[in-house]
Length: 230
Length: 60
Image 1: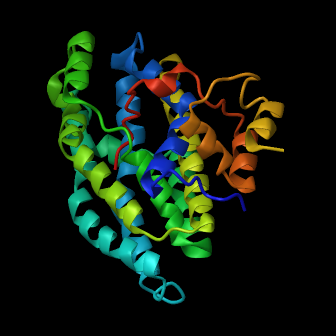
Image 2: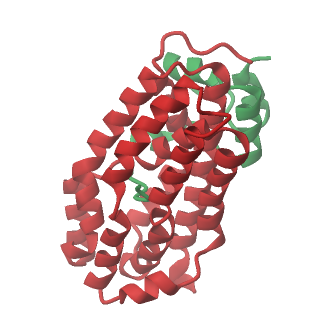
């Protein structure tokens, strides 16, 4: 195992890795926001986003349960992580409803989003975390959360997208609400990471989980970006 | 062989690509498994997009 970077805090090292891994995802995200047929691909984005976000709280609940059960219940890192999750689950509850509200704002019934069969990319992205949690080590979930909450949208950015695309601002409520809460959530997660006594194996698992999450997110966005061709 | 050399040989980094000292240190701290995963994902490290704030939007 390669020694950890000495000058970094845990959060700094994990954020630097994510930045390095994210060039392809960032490019796909940029192409999504600047898509010439944004009004056509945005409903597909909402559907795919909902497929992922509705799993967030159940995924954290599963992680919490495993952290507090044998054989992990004596690991200090996981007990601190479990305490964080118990708090964060409450903060994240109901966010999938925000996406359904956004769909309704552009005339898509909630039922259509809820009933549509999820795509493989969403299932793989969430499902891989269940594997890490139940069959290897739940610390990997930190990589998933770090990616998901790592680039909170800014209010002015979303307002500019709404103006440019001529979609109602109500169709972006999820982004606007996350713009308010996610900077603090990111800071809370970074504080947790810096408080944990992570060893090299933990860092490798978090890095692998983050890399997988980035890979799946990029697949989702590339799929969304080409959905206007269907 | 350093991680940067492995990643360059695999085409994940471009030869002579500039990284900050922090980025170099982070890359060299990657485990073998992380480097293998990066190589198999065929992602490119770096590029200008990492300097931009581009929300992917798939939030929690």
